[in-house]
Length: 349
View 1 (cartoon, rainbow, N blue to C red):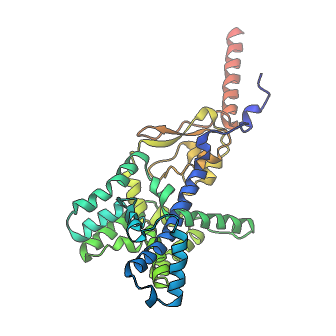
View 2 (view 1 turned 180 degrees about the horizontal axis):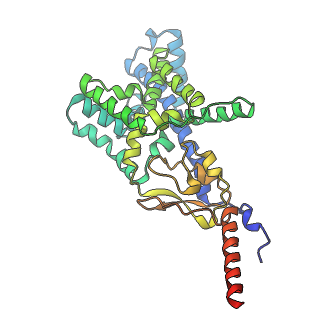
């Protein structure tokens, strides 16, 4: 027998693995960001090794060389060659010999050069297929800017708890598609890859390299700081939702993705925690996902009744109405039962 109201309480015991996916996502984001931090140091050290000019280095360069030799010694005895296995950034690079590029990098290069380089086109094939299958997963699971934007959103939560009111405006999500189009048109007109100048993942990789190799930041760092302030002072995750050209491209590519988050209406209690945690302002509680969803699994992790699951389907569910464990659904069921009872008594009379 089920105790009264027990269906409203969170399920006890060990939660399913899918509820832990958000932790795994944060681990992946952290590792990607750490990799971007490490790669410039490895590249500089590799160039020092290749130069064979230790005696001509300054004392600070020699200290750096010695430290990197100590740090990487257990990994390789041939850094000049082995460090070629992992190079570049999330914009375009090599991962253990596999060349990968952001689809936006490929599309922008085609626009700027007015021709297709087959070898470069193939480097975007794996991310492209992954997006067609999994949706906007790059934005949620790999993008180094997401790591910083979510930390920025956590900072905003702290400010709100301290009583500082922050605006949360809703803009037109279609504007980012205009940004993408204008960026590609300007790339075609100027011969320069304009989108790279306003695309946060490309900016972060570039600026980290500048800081390590050149000892300072470029103008991209100031631009990225503006995007953080935009998210904080204008709209939650505003740049990703309304302005990012890469977000626009990934949304278009992932519109008919095969892996989607969907709601099990029978297990939903309408607590709205999924809506509150969604940084993209979607409506999981009423089956409102759409092409903006990046399958980040934050809503799955926060759901107390495990009512959100990943499913293999090319379409979102139509709105299913109130969750069956929620008060609204129970009230409607009680009213229907009451009306049915009244009808039965009337017929008996």
